[in-house]
Image (cartoon, rainbow, N blue to C red; front, side, top):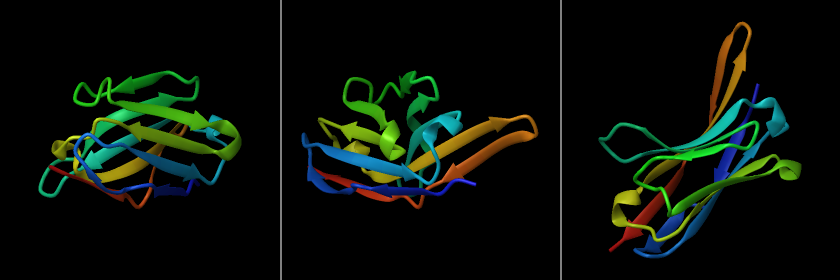
Length: 119
C-alpha cells in the first residue's frame, strides 16, 4: 500500500520552469519504478518520465531535453524538473508508483497537480 502526494503545480509563462514533487509513504527502494504522467482535458493520459529502482530514467520524446526526473531517497520523494515549458505542456500531472510482485503488479496514483503554461 503506497500513498502518493504531488505538489508544485501552478501557472507559468511559456519558457518558464516548475518543479513537481511526489512524496511517497514508503521507501522508494521498495517501488519497482516511479513515473510521471500527464493528461490534458479530453486527451489520453501519457507517460512523460520514468525512474526505476536502480535509478535509470526515461522520457517521452516530447519532453526530452526539457524535463528531468530525479529522486531524493532520504525524503522518499521523486521530482520532475520542467524547464522551457510550452503551452502544450498544460495538463494535470500525476505521479505513479509500480510494484512488480510475484502475485501481480501493484499500481498506485497520486491525486494530480495542475500545470498551466500560458503563451
